Image 1 (tube, rainbow, N blue to C red):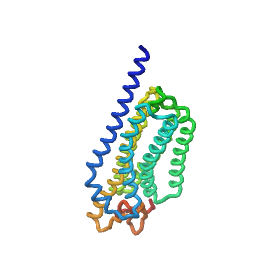
Image 2: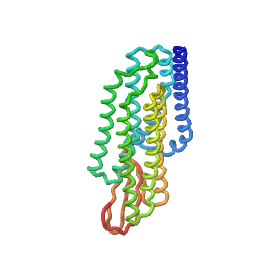
Image 3: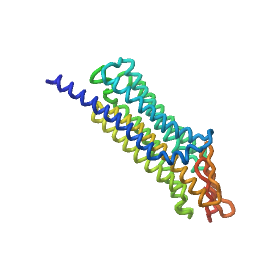
Image 4: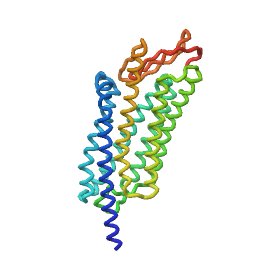
Length: 308
């Protein structure tokens, strides 16, 4: 009876994994379709040397290709035809891909924060240290855990129970996201205290950063719950993290492109896009100029005399 129950549990887990694999792809396709008109209008016309254009295409369509690949790879693995070496290769692939998508979103957020703080070296070093800490934690955990992953069925390794060490990596991601959010909010508060009110650019960055932080927090929380409950279907969080990270990253870029077009239409200051986002804030002759290359360029009246 126990053997029959174990067989039923494995069959149920395989179905759940396959359902989530398909559902995450459907979600990504839906998001691509609903934002396609905006993408054609704001992203495609960008010059070839624009960094964020290629980053957008990578996290949008590169992730789509990988999700389509999963529709063939996952059934193959869950049919019991995977070898031990193939299983280890799968987990290495999942780790690298998930980190690449997370890093892409964090790169967008870090670039915006770096721009908000006028290309401060201290901010750059802080963000670089956080990124390296996150990657190193993942690498160390992977080296120690992937060779020892145990599956309920050796031929269905995708159902391997998650190692508890994954919680340490989740904490480093949460630390990075929290730091980015706090830095953005601090700049938002500072701008408002300077008497500039709800500056469109800073307000947009704060709103986007808060939403992305909330989404990433939910993903990390759900992953931690799966790990804590020793679930065999934790791999479903990998599929969803790819789709959600792709959506977040692309919408971050699209929102700034929209803001740029809006500012270009309502002011005489041209919004110029290049491969980098750039902000230079300074006070001169009772005026503050905030420039965003690859985001926006806006001239704001300011009575303050101290530099931002």
